[in-house]
Every structure is written in structure tokens, then in C-alpha cells.
Image (cartoon, rainbow, N blue to C red; front, side, top):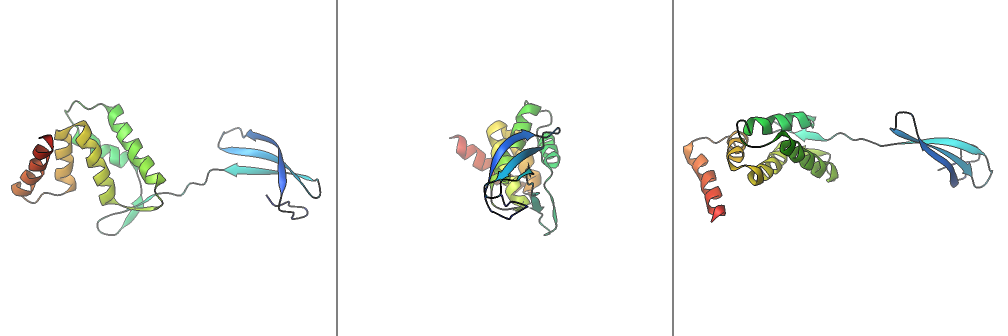
Length: 152
């Protein structure tokens, strides 16, 4: 950390504590050259995830929107809200840990389908039918055939 008095690039931390809100860390520092003390604040930098939709428009990632889609797919199914929240958390963490800040909506849908397939196959098929926009009964049957093949 550069000293605000002499511009020397190195300092040592004397004291470190969270602020009242707990969202920042206050650090007291001492310059290693001139010995003067100064205060710095450290905050977490948040860069929003942007979802690129099929029509190329962009919107901020909304975990509630994803949870809503999963809830609709799991309606009247033996899947708990806690399970769905865990799925959303896993997907959000995966997206946050990726280097991309712009994520195609198709990738989010794919992640959701993979997780639903592990939890409830009926919910998976419901979600896939909306997400993949099945045009006719044949495309729907192809997806069901894939599930049946994976069970063998």
C-alpha cells in the first residue's frame, strides 16, 4: 500500500478490524520509510454476473428467477425447497467461480437440468420441456428415451 505522505510503496499493518457493518475491514498502517500512520479500508469487489439471453439481450443474474423456474418444474413433486435452494447455490457458485462475467442463459439451463436429473426425473423432464422448447411429441419422446437408456 503506497504511503499517502511520501509515496513509499511499502507499509506494515498495525491494527486490523471489521467496521460496524462488517462489510469492510479497517486497517491502520505505518509507512516503512517515513513512519507516518494512515488508515485504509478493504472491501469486497462485486462484479455482477450478466446473463446473455437467446435474443442477445443482457440482464443481471437473478437467483430468484432460477429458483422460480425450478419451483415450477418441481410443483407437486417430492422435492424440498432446501434441495432447490442448494441447487441454486451450487449453480451460482459455479458461475461466480468461472472467469466469464457474461454467461449464456443456455449454460444456466444446462446446469439446472443436470442437477434436476439427479434429484427428480419428472421435474427434469418438465424443466427440459420448457427450456428446450420441444416442438412436438417426437422431440419429447427422444428426451424420455435418453433417460430410459441411462437407467439401463
